[in-house]
Image 1 (tube, rainbow, N blue to C red):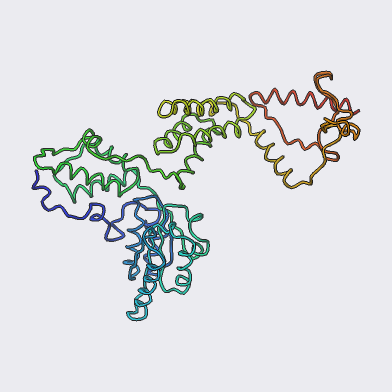
Image 2: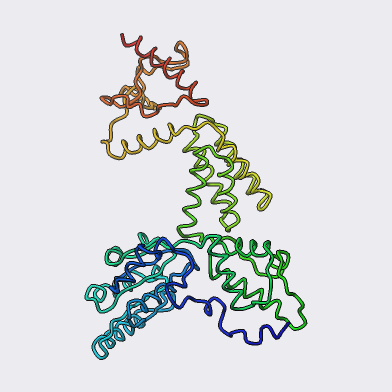
Length: 436
């Protein structure tokens, strides 16, 4: 069995199988298929600055390298993790030599461009502007937030996508043919590799390389790889998840919108995706409380209570038991009656208060703890609501003088708020009768 691997290349499988031509690239058909943006750009032979934005392992570096080949340009690569101003200057000097001494144009590739600070990004601007080099940046973060607007305006952004199941299966066949043609993979093993790759070609190739290394141990007799072998012998990482990046905020947005959309299954899915990816359950608990206040409110006041109880339960039990309480809260919030009336009323009142003048408190609403304040009329003519019919001082005003009733709070006809709406209509009629 060991003879099978005598000629195995020393380079990592992910590097050995890096595409040598555009035609070899797997995935990104929305950019590379006939008539699509990058295919047209490569076919034209006219390079332009670009930013390749997408998750890890989808081909950003590969496309940058192949761009140099397609456009017949020299290629200079920098990693924003390791490079500083010194390395940027050296790259600029090299691009200048390529142009002045050899008549060659250059593509400058900056991997993880989002890790360059503003001054480092600014150092590239005049040379992108002058055409000294064509700039290509790669990032896993939203360039709208992480790339300077000046540099962003000079580059076309292309969004790369995770590889789908069929594309990952194609990559598995290519890797098997290259590295281990005599080893069989059953369907369950292939499915497990695809699932654990999570759309990341590099991760998939690394997993396959682990398989190759595991069965090349002297004395190994494994000729067929099954699911049991994959899930027990390999280092399987968690789902793709960046606690500070776009995927984090996209997933919490999906959770919130699933709750708002009254879909308990989707709500549980996104909650579990975030827990599986390593999100802090305490953060999720805070967001669940926010959902109860923002999207359910007084339509079902029990929602905020249950959300708070879930947060406290997690604090007492921790993981994994406490996560069950968060799941229960999410399901309850998803199926509860929905109302954002309180949330909208609060926002409207907050905006009004921020932009309005400092109106004085009417005398009848003022506190009067001293004789002087009483002599000044503080609290005079105040009507104690509990002493009035229906427990309501009909016709009384509680807003500053000259301020019309804004009617910010408009209860909806769902859940408890339908009863609140009836009560408010009754009180408004009492006011109208009192003011006749």
